[in-house]
Image 1 (tube, one colour):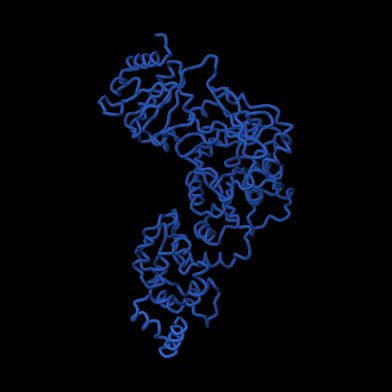
Image 2 (image 1 turned 45 degrees about the vertical axis):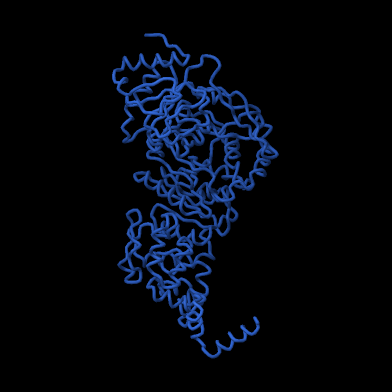
Length: 595
């Protein structure tokens, strides 16, 4: 029976020819099967297929129909068919709608996409416009740079033509020539690497450009052989930007050699190594430059913070002898890092490191023996040995870090640890206990994390056993973005500052948490927790003395489990406020003598 049906179908095809699919569809209600000819016709009818752009992109001969070539080849390769539409980020549903001639459905699908999925310029393009009408009238604004679709087309064509010819190779590096090459005095070259990402990278580059408008800063963006679509996005956005240089090696060089390439091709007196999953905050660069001018400082890092305002790293420490390094004060409130002077570190992170170009190049950059891990620790240990000096952390310079977002980031973690310990284990003879003492803490012990042949000694910090000050934490309703900057439009800033000052007058320590901090891993260090009742999660923490701060009204359910209550009106008088805080401290077991 199947053979008879096949024979009948072949006979019907011979008889009906090109009308076979249409007749079959009408008889059995089946959709027309896809074909290059039908897809090409739908593309041309949509008005969204730019035949001239695609012909030049593919360098097609005059005898080849661009739409048919796209249907047969370009669609499978996800090549752009219009300079303002990137197929890889548009998505399958939209492309199917376009191939079937459903232009309205295609545009509707575009509108549903999140901004970071749109093509090179679509984030700033009014999607409802008819692209095919007049390309020269379609102007796109990117951070104040006006660009027509024609200009975007030229960029993408140039990029596509150069895919087989990478923009830069590192090859055999002449480090001495790089060291003696002229550099622009006072300029900071931000070295940023990316692999298979454009969304985080553009956010990071834009943040650098936005926060350094009045400073001599260039961004050297090293695209570590990402897929073509990522490169097209980055070229379209930064290809002719006067402050950005785009480098694209033929293969993924990984972090160390990729950073070395960026450093060698840069022009600044200073190098700022900066991860592409970071967001520098307002005023971040000047304090770093000032810190680097101090005698004996080889390199400096900003305070790296999680998006909720807690510390991601305030330096790099060794929590035990002959152990791997660990981030300092991970998960602590910002105040703990500020309390520390930021000096005397044996290493800092290369996720955000400012160093003189001459020092970086004289050390020949990062050692390529490491693959995406431990390069920075090895570099700092070599720097201390070969050129002297130390490493600082500048807490007034703040950068948000989303941490380890690059694909394959931890693939060689075990091998990297073996290389580092083989080289340096004999010299790592002491723990960095003093760093915790300078932050008002005590390094109690190091908890081993057996995740490979060499353990990471994870530090466990406690409050000092001697002369221990009571510690308050204020859980505010202020957003983390304001807590990180130390100011903002939130109405409770003046109240928070007054509370901090009054608590410090008692001789106590105080930290401030943003609204996004729900449960901090270092809460065991706190003695008294003062919670703003306006928070959506205004509830007590187990094991703490919990105080609810409200406007004076009685909020059902919010005060269950709280040990004491304060009202904002009761704090209006400084003397009364001080007396009330002393009473709370005494109730918590920390009496304060009247003054």
